[in-house]
Image 1 (cartoon, rainbow, N blue to C red):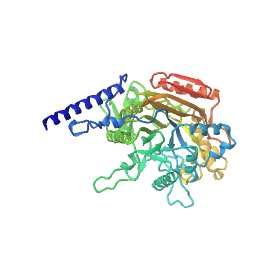
Image 2: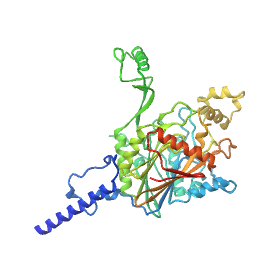
Image 3: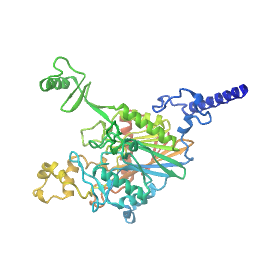
Image 4: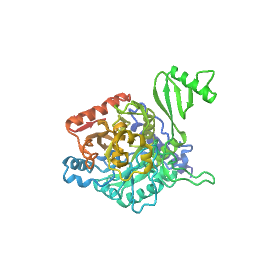
Length: 502
């Protein structure tokens, strides 16, 4: 008996040492590796099976050559695949989408049949309530979509009823989705797609969402709430000393606060301000939300061979208030993305900002800090009455006969004045990440143009960009990457396709 116990301890130690060495080798060369923010920590290794170390379940295990294809926001209102018969550029896009082993995008609309729908629109601050015809679900599947993220600010445009109806139609089409649910646990939960080369997990969450759209867990006698998996962030506007002095004087007069000393931070007019050397935006992530998100990523990876993590975020760091310039993602998203990869994510995607953003390869994993739009449907029928009320001044200023304004007549000046007529809004990419030996081998970017200025029925349908358009698209990505303080990309360009090697 003692000899057997001694042999068991020896086997355990050898197995544990092997596991430690494997982890060290896997991380070799990763000088900036953070501790896994979702690691529960082993208190007593003797309670675990050395043949199944916890770290083993976090390994990427898709077959060599696994190719994940991803795109940005799917703002789509009607079936579109039929356009491929007469639009060669769109036909080429569909052929590209179908090349990989799995295809994902961000589903930023509700899918419902208003003829029998029992819910209602819930517009917010004059934003469009996006909707799509029921046939869109099967059309997306026909195009090749396997997974969609759904945590975003349009997930409840048509209330919880619209969220549920969208779930039903996506399920019927065989499209895997994540990011919403009947309570916070379900909204946080990873979803899985069974690809020929491995099980693919998806975790979806949002830092930009409608008021009260956040899913809640039960609390005491209060039940949980259906909704979106969210990451709460607190925004601060950085201002220089002279501006903070003015704000402090206003705070003293209106709130009887900050009267004697210059504050480092203050809140006035429902906005947080922070003393700084210049202007900018900062964000602080909620600790509880972070912990739950990293745990969901860890759990998703333990139950999959490959894990995609996505956030929908409008949070901006630079060029946030100049509609003539593309926005740059907030700095905290880099911290979030790195921690997500450390927790087990194999690809991290930021959607929400309507332009292409920086690109980073961290620990052999691609991170996209801005995927822009992929479909952009300006055909939105119907729109609720309060959108007209909210934008009454815009309508009165633009038209002689406001009573004759249609949904598109309303959208047209809002697009033109709100920055949605800029070329960069209609520049997009298809990404294909190819993995070999559990790491990114190469990343291919296909430049896409959404055809701004075409007739309404054709605008917003992606086509492979011309080499001239592609040049602008790839330069945008390289410039944004440099602005974000990331290493330059090893990019080679051939026509409308760029290849990046880690």
